[in-house]
Image 1 (cartoon, rainbow over the protein chains, first blue to last red):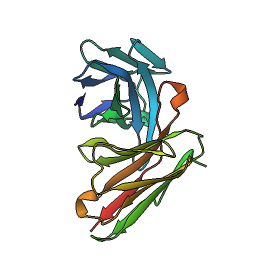
Image 2: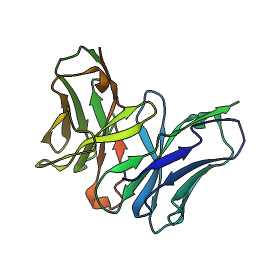
Image 3: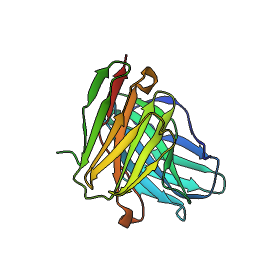
Image 4: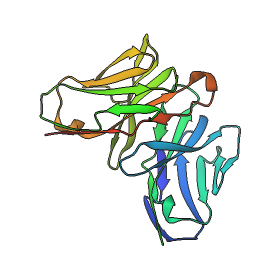
Amino acid sequence: KQEVTQIPAALSVPEGENLVLNCSFTDSAIYNLQWFRQDPGKGLTSLLLIQSSQREQTSGRLNASLDKSSGRSTLYIAASQPGDSATYLCAVKGNSGYALNFGKGTSLLVTP
Amino acid sequence: DADVTQTPRNRITKTGKRIMLECSQTKGHDRMYWYRQDPGLGLQLIYYSFDVKDINKGEISDGYSVSRQAQAKFSLSLESAIPNQTALYFCATSDSTSGANVLTFGAGSRLTVL
């Protein structure tokens, strides 16, 4: 069974810092990997999706990388802002099946 | 209006009661999913449906049932609720024709079973 781990579980940084969130997975036979943002009391919003053949995806201040062979993905957030405070979830879709395997998330707090 | 709407948003019930959580979508997506989120455990897939006539069990289907009433509607039922079903439940949709299988989530339904 695919296991997805996110480190750290929680992170607090001052505004303006660049930061990296980590996601690792045990089975490298993946179809794609997604990063989601979850705000308290709200659902999940898809931030970036990386196909297995891709190395990275960028959207604004966000950059996600994928190293399938080592079972790792990182989400880089540049020039963090208080509005970035949320829980960030990594999810992996395998080559077989349908389901996404989610990590437990990293809770990010960006202080003014 | 939200693309994926879940009702109710919050529900408190007692052990043994039957509960239905409803999900409707305006995305026109063919695939729909029910996930459960527990603190410290991440999201787990309960059931999924690839079209109206296709229903499949996920990782943790015991104690739950679903109904796909139409392409836009997918409901989750707890026939006899128990306290360890207290959780945040999410409905999600995706479009099989897009290839990427990007999920769109509803805002969640918080269920408390006393």
